[in-house]
Length: 253
Image 1: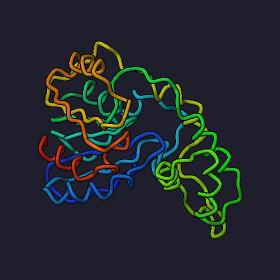
Image 2: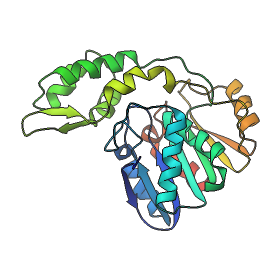
Image 3: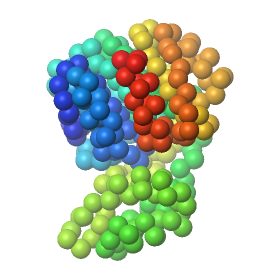
Image 4: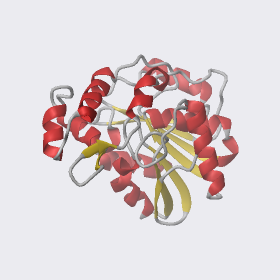
C-alpha cells in the first residue's frame, strides 16, 4: 500500500506515526522543529487514516508491513521511528519484525500489552456525525459535543473533516473499518518479540496508559530502553506539553 506522507527537511530519516483516529497533520508543528535539527522528517498517514488509502484489511501486522514497504520505496535506512498510541504499537512491531531498517525507536504513551476497547462513544459520535448534513465546522463541533465533552479531543477528531463537495463536509478516515476493527487496536504484541537497539518510552504524567508494571514488561522486550515522564501532560503528550516533549526526544536522538 502506498501511504500518504509529508516530508520536511533533510538529513537522517525520522518517521512519525500518529495514533488511532489521528493523522500526520497532528504532528506538523513538531515535525518542523525536528526538521530544523537536520532530520528528514516523514509525517505518515497510516492506512484508513488521513489521506492514505482505505482498506478492509487492518491489523498491526499489515500496518508494520506498510512501514517496511514505505522505507523500501523511498530507500530509507537507519531510520528513527516514533509512534504515538496506536502508532506506537505499529512502531514497536515494525522495529521487532524489520530490525535492520531501524536505528532508534521512540514510543509515546503506550505499552505492548492488551488494552480493552475504550473508544466506543467517540466512534458512536463520529458515526452519527457522518450521517449529518454538515455545512460548517462550527456545526460539526456543536453536534459532536454531545458525544465528546472534552473540547481538545473534539478538535483533534474534527481535523478529520474535509469538504467532499462545495456544500458538504465529510470524514477522511475509514470509519466503518476502524469501528469493525476496534478490538484489534488494543491487541497485545507477541511476547517473544525483541528489540535490542536504543529505545525511548515516553509517558504523560496524567495518563494511565503506562504503569510501573508495564515498564517491566517493556524492558523484557525492548532491552535497551529508557523511560521519560512528561509533566503536565496526559495521553496526548506531544500536544499538551510540546516543549518538554521535544526536549526529551531531541536529547535521545
